[in-house]
Amino acid sequence: MGINFIEFTNGHLPLYFTWASKPHVKNQWFREGYTPPEAILDKLKGDSSAFPFIIMLDGKEIGFIQYYHLTENDKEIFGEEVESTVGFDIFIGAEDYIGKGYGTEVVRKFAEKLLAPAGVGRVITDPFTDNKGAIRCYEKAGFSFVKTAKDNCGTEIYIMEKVKGELLI
Ligand SMILES: CC(C)(COP(=O)(O)OP(=O)(O)OC[C@H]1O[C@@H](n2cnc3c(N)ncnc32)[C@H](O)[C@@H]1OP(=O)(O)O)[C@@H](O)C(=O)NCCC(=O)NCCS
Image (cartoon, rainbow, N blue to C red; front, top):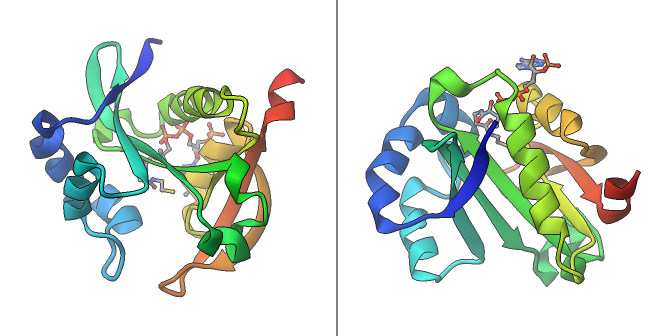
């Protein structure tokens, strides 16, 4: 399966907003009180700590993925190693592509890329604890449970990590 990641550009905005309005995406990403879809405009300008990409499957756009660097403020929830840790978030926007194993392959490949640079030793992600499909997907992609915590809106999140050494096993 041909998965690759292309840089998000202005041309992707209509598709992104269509995906963002779909219930399966909205319920996990854009609940009231969370960062709204419009924040993508700051990301495009580079005024954000997140780096956005479109997920391509055999030449077709199927979803969105981003990575971000952790900051000092994240230490309490994500641990002391913020400088060598990157986080990621994902959604598959096209419903036809959900639950078919693509998410697992996408996450595995993206994590491999994130762990490649010398300075990066750990990738983390933080689905809502009730997002069983995402948690299962990340487990299949080699992520392990770290702990649960509360996010800034008070929702329980399920922190998972993949560390560099695990790639060599
Ligand atoms: C999360 C997401 C990226 C996963 O991608 P995907 O292609 O659907 O995932 P996969 O098909 O590779 O794996 C999903 C696994 O979860 C399982 N699953 C799905 N719903 C489940 C549920 N309610 N309870 C338990 N397991 C569930 C599937 O059976 C599958 O596991 P299996 O292969 O062992 O049967 C995708 O579903 C998505 O974009 N969802 C909406 C947005 C979202 O939740 N983003 C993540 C925010 S952290």
